[in-house]
Image (tube, chains in turn brown, purple):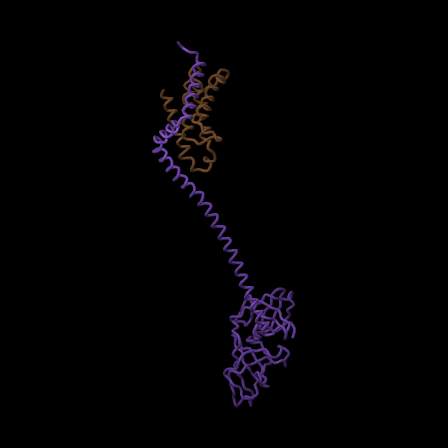
Amino acid sequence: MRKLLISLLLFYILILLQVSFLPHFFLFSWSSISNLAFIIIFLIFYLCFSERPEKNSGIIPALFAGFFLDIFSGNFLGIDFLGFWTFILAIIAIFIKFFLRRYVRFPLAQ
Amino acid sequence: MGLPPKLKIGLIVVLLLAFFVILNLTPAHKGVKNFFYLISSPIQKTFWAAGDSFSDFLESVFQGEKIKEENENLQLKIQQLVAENTSLQELRKENEILRQALEIGLEKDFELSFAKVIGKDLFQDSFTINKGKEDGLSSGLPVITQQKILVGKIGEVYENFSKVILVSDKESSFDVKIADREISGVAKGKGGLGLILDLLPWETEIKEGEQVITSSLGGVFPGGILVGSIKNVKKSDVKPFQTAEIRLATSLKELSNLFIITKF
């Protein structure tokens, strides 16, 4: 639970950084889907692979990370749908959990 | 009653999708966004201010380098322009001198070669000019100013440079006459930019201020070139000739451009 709360807070802070801090820098403001979106995706991968195989708690941060992206980031490719990123990230997390996870073993998993 | 995990997840996803579809169809999604913006605004403001100042700082660092580089380029350009300007000013001066010479009609009387003074040895009464053997100069050629005033004659000639022996040189001696009068004499250099007029007939009356011009008698210089004016006439009963000092018509110290008469 603690880990979940920390990861939610981290995603919240990261998304706020993306919309309020990084736009000041040319390199990070080139696209509405900026580097941080990929960082979040990377973090979801990490969360999914680093937990026990039977646990599915990695999906929850993915949902929230997507939700925060939906709230704070602009339209992606003209799609203005609250929940777009939530679904994208949720699907990624589910895919990791139920397909890749079944056949791949990482030493990170506890 | 427990549902299988796959079904549970599928159900969650479907419910979530339905929730968001409904949310997007109603104005409520704006309210949700507004709520998050509201609670995030203090943090966002802080991040915004931090990003602003940090980017300003980075910009100043990078701009500083850019400004420095631009400054160096501009300095270089200024130097180039100053050099170009100096060269143009030189050309303009040269042009003015040549025009003045043309107005006097020097080119009609003589064949001339223009030269610049590049060195002066006033103790030795000599100049160095930037023309030499390559430019067709030879020893003994008369040197005048653009106002047709005598300066001296060419002494030693090098490939690209020549020495001009000034009329005031101690070894210098040439025939002159008083302008508009048939009174001849010999001008002799006395060194230190001084010139005296000797061998003036005793019986003639010479007045101060009368102009002295070259005479073609000795063949050293062409006739009719202004040398200077009379001052301090000395007449002695015991000497058969009278002498006078010649005030040079031009300030030799300030000369920088000369004409060499290559043919007369």
